[in-house]
Amino acid sequence: MPAQYEPRLEFAFTVKISLDRAYWVRPPDIGCVRAGIYLKDGTVIYLQNRGFRWGPQAVMDAMARNEPVDHGSYYFRTSPKFEAPEGKHDWVNRHIFIGVGEKVPKGNQIHYYKLV
Image (cartoon, rainbow, N blue to C red; front, side):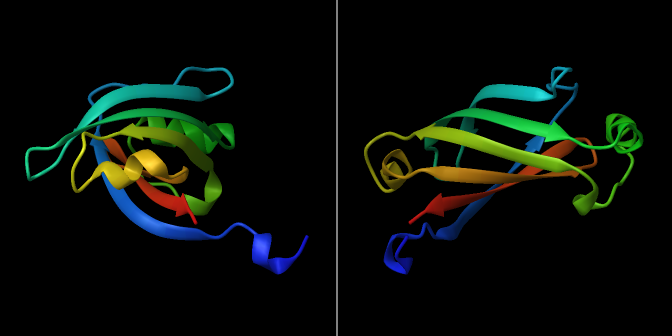
């Protein structure tokens, strides 16, 4: 495949999600979240996020107890779909994204990259 057609990812933004309970379903550790992202300017963006999180059982157990674990010790990726109202954030409606998740105490951070 010619280099001009190789996909390129560009960092877009990070979303921090505070969790008061587990949202992952086992097995096979597939999660699907539907939520509203509330921005500081009052905009609400709908998010549908399907993802996978898996790793060695000891690491998964530590994450369930909200203990810190090395980011490289597990796989956490998402395939999101965003729906924003017309305006300055509607660019998210016209891109494909990949999310790289990070387990943080009492929640997750997902770093989103757009396919350009």
